[in-house]
Image 1 (cartoon, rainbow, N blue to C red):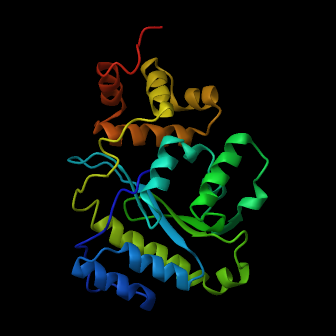
Image 2 (image 1 turned 120 degrees about the horizontal axis):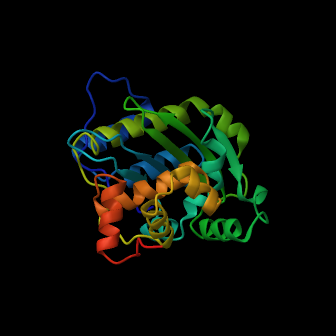
Length: 261
């Protein structure tokens, strides 16, 4: 994933009730100020070092579904995450995908399970991601939203997370509201658009071109069907394709693979 967006010139509805911790972010959004430093300071108060909110938008008649991510982490981490297809190995995804409650995690609990997972954990640690708390939610458009609070500590203070549980949920939900309304509703493109396809995305497109379904591809690549969908959404976003058929056609035209067996 890339660091897609620096939210500026954002707005929120005047009738919304906003937690006190979010008020500086709302004010900054309305003033057109970059939100990343303010978000970083807000999550620091909650005991974390960085923040991420990401989702795939719902397609509209005049607008394609796109992947969007906001993070306070450096662009280098976002680019590395994308190119290494770390979505397939990120334990945070596996922990929260099929539940609505918050989960705390530590890299120490996952080291040694596989070489690729170890590589992800080692790279994440270089950017201050060694533990954290995360959860998923669904917005009014039924978009699946992932919210992650990251820490450079080997283990986070679970009691502190418990004390701040309501605030952490509220912060994530309200931040996404700002994020969604001032990006998706305004039709702003994802910053993934135009980025290079990863090897995995090209591989998935090639299998789609040969008529395989998401379930077929998940079995062939030993990944979850939702991960196959993520790779397709990412490829479509990068190629500005309306659907997977157009994405395949563009990939063939670019000579990325041959559709013949």
